[in-house]
Image 1 (cartoon, rainbow, N blue to C red):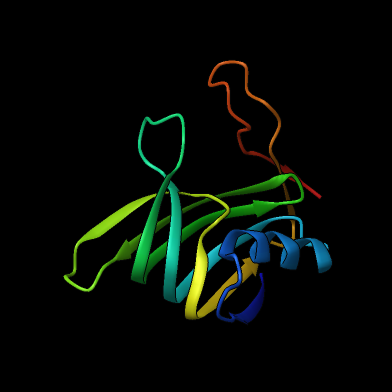
Image 2 (image 1 turned 120 degrees about the vertical axis):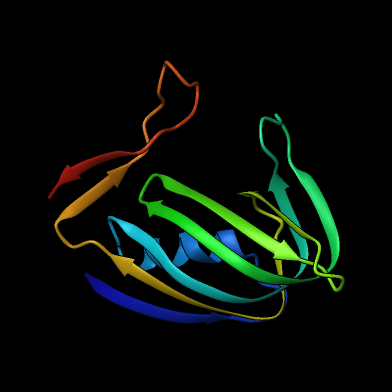
Length: 131
């Protein structure tokens, strides 16, 4: 595994930046190893909901997990507010950094991730192949 570390700055969109980083570095099979930071806005698709929900305020990122491929990303995030109330879901564009996000990614060197449409689920689902 090759490990990459990056820091996002205020106002950057966390999903767009992770996809861009992966594309710029031509990464084929990315996993999120860790992430700490904060958001001032979070766009999440909650469980079994067709559309995203926008949360505004100040949030700590307490978890970010998932995969990034040349075809896109599948990431889930948990955030907590100033009272410790935590919510999580599928990360969508529109999730903006408040102060920072320190992220460590790993690329699995012998693999390639793809996300073709899966007729059974109706979503772009992960397919893993060897390179």
